[in-house]
Length: 340
Image (cartoon, rainbow, N blue to C red; front, side):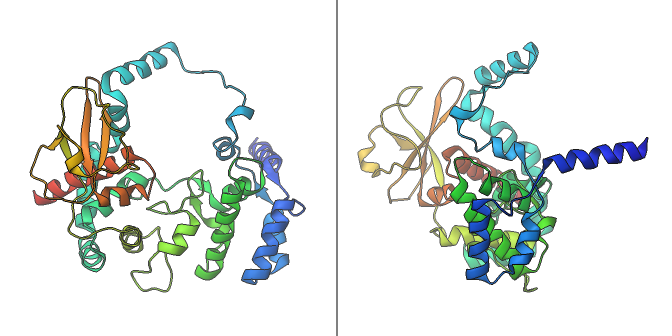
């Protein structure tokens, strides 16, 4: 019985495997790797001869108009619960209630204390507060507990070669990933990551790994699965994207009414504070540069915040105002927890 089961699993995996050696996109990728980065053609052909196609990753990037509408398989109770949550919390509450949870805060405090010396050295070198670095690691990978289960090589190959809306992007990421495997000396088949091919505690895409990764422990390799390199790499990412040491990130403000529609909100829109009449910080805020208006939709009202330049820097990590606000709020709670 055991032999039959093993044979069945082998057949199942074989059906999901694909030979890309004659695929035009794969041939183009191999040519670039050979000509520009001195890979051996024979090694690449062997590598691309057996790729396990990641169907679930591919579905996330398939053009929506070509996707068949999938049947809602939720039970009536699950559908009712989802509706209740939308009504109870608003969009911000639904987004943040697990991301900025007491459990995540406690994990963040413990993580900073565990790696205190590294955080202190990194903060001194890059000027980025430890609580913001920790918040990124907490949101991206739950402090290393969830770095992803997808085989990165297979995932990036699938997304680079199978037709989807971001083929060019993933071809670039696949090339960067294979370059990394060569320069950093690891087997590309041994790395696990997200459904999009993001790697490590901080979930860098391979191109970001190359541009912003830091070998902070000086062992000759950038290993974002290790805390010291991951902590420094987040700080380096922020600094290179314009983080301003000593400046604030965001503060909550007051306005008239319960729903805010007077000005455009979001990280893309900036304003001089003198032009924002009837809006004022709830606490003293000496920041004098342009601000962004960040609106958090709640059940009964809109919560409004000023976002500073450093808030915008956080959105370079993930282009979402809600993401950046979650990082900010988690960071501030970790900061309070570290004082206790």
